[in-house]
Image (cartoon, rainbow, N blue to C red; front, side, top):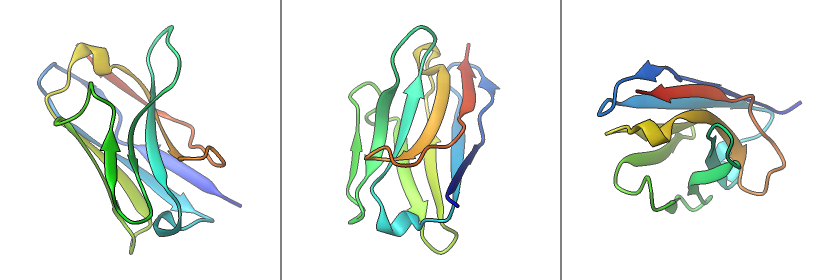
Length: 112
């Protein structure tokens, strides 16, 4: 049984930072291309950061230079460090495999 459980969402002021975590069970994050998606209110879900299983990282333009995706293979956790947060970063953040086979339940980030 695969589970991806996100945590770390919160309400912060613009310019602040948050670190999201995604604890995986049933799969190994080292064996999958992993990603963070964001769904803002009344908008489609968007992939904001992803990491290949060779540890190459990629970002959508609006978060480039502010967000950092990483993983701890020993702990089987995927992270998203978010710095210099902006109101437009508000949304539900989901951890998922890049191909969409597995999804977490999401964690809310609100930036005001």
